Image 1 (tube, rainbow, N blue to C red):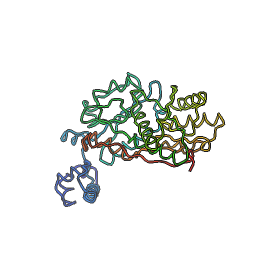
Image 2: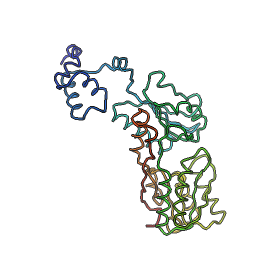
Image 3: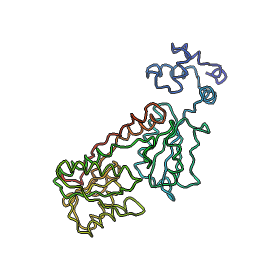
Image 4: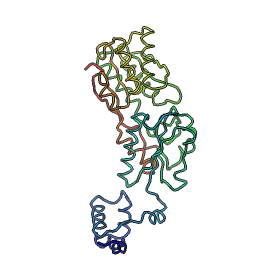
Length: 339
């Protein structure tokens, strides 16, 4: 079909060929999830056969919608996007995939320094909704975006504020699973490595689930240790060195995140301590890099697909905050804990 002829094709022509009404054509081609897959396919085929294309600009003006979700990734100051925690890249990928499945494009913004901060995507009609995710350690970035976090077109992962429209992992269940797995491996003198300060509620929740599960087995609250450093990996290394320097009798570690667990594994290896023979180690996050550590890291992994879908649904108003339960987690069995 020639370009000239194609421009004369209307939604009425597509509706007639597909055997539906014009409003159904418009809704299907604009990604309305209420249109069934067979009907959508029939309409898309009819449009392709006729050479019909939606005028995106006209559609935006008519509906007031952009068909775009803005995804703000908050990173550590002074770092490039390539230094983003792989966990957040996994979340980002699943958010974009979920948005695409619902017919939305993703506009991604990496923000670390004050000159990068920008939250006006909806006001400028660049996006219909905003998903924020990233490190809670960038206090300035989260403080800048705080007014956004209660708005109905917003959702977030990693915000340090309890009243934000947050999606998060079922951290307490993850801590429970870590405790049960270490106990099954025969470990009894357990410690927790992680930062429990006020801006790291997810780490606190993991510790609380770990502690409560041990208590149910008659084991006292495990000691916690945390040595600060520029990176999570180095924090794990330093925390293990402190444990060893204090001569604490430990045979099992639950680390609040995989990056710290990888640092812990390195420090234990340097000290000549065998994992999992002498000490069992479990992390949390499900990072792919843990499969290649020495030994491969047993970890608690959130369901990233569910996390991405819940973040998008909450931002689009498809679910209410009260329905945004913790994302399910599961144990990824590798080799850092005795079987």
